[in-house]
Amino acid sequence: MEQLTSTQQLWLMGVGGLIIGFVIAFFVIRISSGNVRKQLQTQSELKQMRHEVDEQKAKLETHFAESADLMKTLAQDYQKLYKHLASSSVTMLAEDKSKALFNQTALLAPVEAKTVTTLEGEAEKIAEITTSEPPKDYSKGSSGLLKTEQK
Image (cartoon, rainbow, N blue to C red):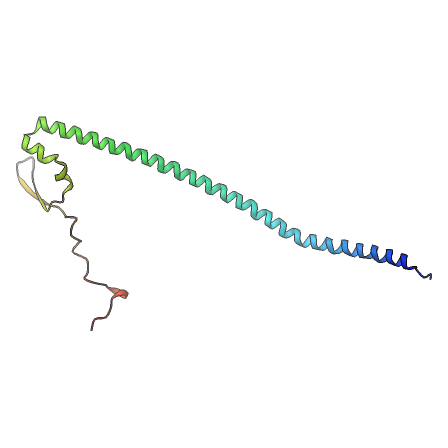
């Protein structure tokens, strides 16, 4: 066999290195392409989820805006009803009863017992719970796991 000159050996080593580089690059790209596909799939899922969240936020905003409008309308209707009943009570009821029925402070103040006259003319007492006292079923102090032992 003939001996190769140093230039030919250098060219042969370069071509061999290039072929080995292509083979290594091919395997690296093949292995990492799965990761790239997974990243692209995850990215598309993330975009889809963001879109769904934005849609949900828009639905919630429209729901609460509509609910607020309906509550405003309801409050206005109650005010109209109250004004109608107050003005009608002045003309239909005796003056002392109409003042007592539609007095704003009397409506807001807690009352312990109220006497109501029924259509048959009988007087009945109706008890109302005042908001200043807590319910009687509360225990004194902690109970259960939070209870501290008393000596």
